[in-house]
Length: 197
Image (cartoon, rainbow, N blue to C red; front, side, top):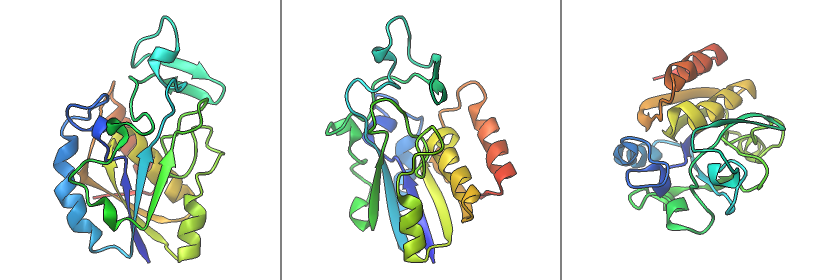
């Protein structure tokens, strides 16, 4: 059984959004086409409460993209984005979200960010996705979405670490590429055994 994992294709990560990934909207038609070939379609949705600890605005004297040490490790401080219930948090209007078997919301705990579809950024607190995949008998994943060097990478590496077969369709992802983060992400995924198509 094979699942398509569509990561954070939301308005705030697309052009005009609060944390726009260059070309983020370009991948939507290809993702929709790929949905028909999967046994299951799973969408993830960044879903932050207002004032989330990963927002630069929550830390006086800090600016977006600063690095800050949190109890769970280093954290990039982001512009406010994907705030629960806002238009920015909604899926891109062109995404065929009705095809989803499951939607996993992440990043909703105020004190910890969540890049991976499987774990919060402490690498311990689970989202429940692993259990869902195992009970469905899903053993292989194809990852697509935003952003390749952050949420896609963390999700793919965690999936491989948990024993799933994982491929990332780079043509159906876009990256932030901040200070060499894209090259580093590709190395990390390759080292974890993730297939990079």
